[in-house]
Amino acid sequence: MKSVVNKLISLIITVLVISFVTFIVFSIIPGNAAIAKLGVDASPEQIERLEEEMGLNDPIVLRYGKWLLNALKGDFGESLQYSGTKVSALLSSRLQVTLVLSLLSMGLILLFSFPISLLCVRHQGKWVDALLSGLGQVLMAVPAFFLGIMITYLLGLVLHFFKPGAYIPLSENPSRAVLYLLFPAISIALPKISMTVRFLKSSIQGELSQDYVRTARSHGMSQGKVLSAHVLKNALIPVITFLATIIAEIMAGSIVAEQVFSVPGIGRLLITSISARDFPVVQAIVMYITSVVVTAGFVMDILYILVDPRLRRK
Image (cartoon, rainbow, N blue to C red):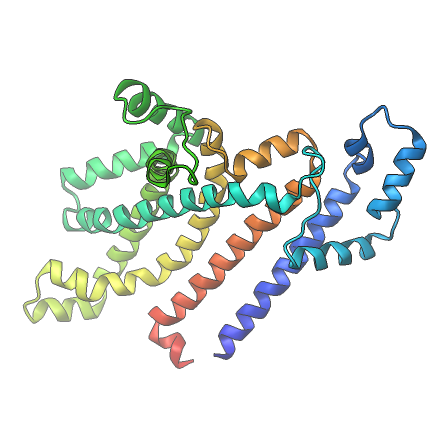
């Protein structure tokens, strides 16, 4: 229990430090939020008045404190690009799209990685293992945007499984929206499946050389029974930490996938906001991604403790 509390405190400190650094970076970047909001034709008096209203003349620590208190209430300020629109309102509709896309990607990774890894181990050195390993190497080498383009061309334009660019909002038709999001999820998941299979296969092979495996085999247990009943659970311990990094990569991959497949998620909003120098929106998205990645690491640490009885005893 003490270990969990320490990790939770570490999570909170990490998020606070990153939020402060992010706020400082966006404060020192050249550019004036008041000018961005009023336009270049605004008079110096108008700019000065708005700077005073926005608190831009206050000390940076005071500005950060005000921003943090508002952020904890879910208020990240107003967008500079969409004047008068709350950042939280911009994020709310796009956030659910990215969450569904990320969950679909993670689901595909978990669904296919484990059976493929076991298949490769059971047929180690045979053509099945060679074929799947070679295909995995290719998928890991292909850039994310090119893989998305190929899926769009083959599954969309050639096989007509979906209509590229014709995304249906979740609020209008949830089933059709999820079906459309399945294809960008595939483009995100394929390289990650290859990475997870490679890592899990290596972990399983390391466990197969342990004494307890030889003992189980000497008692007449089949290879499949040994793998499913004993080896897989122990092999999962290092893989859990690896999956935490996969979640971070899914967040990065969703930015590319949303651009390629014209999905209105936070990744696409991030690109347009950076181009428009809409720093309040960019800052909120950076904090969201940071929170997801850090929380994923915390959850994986808890799972690590649950899976490994030695850590529970400690």
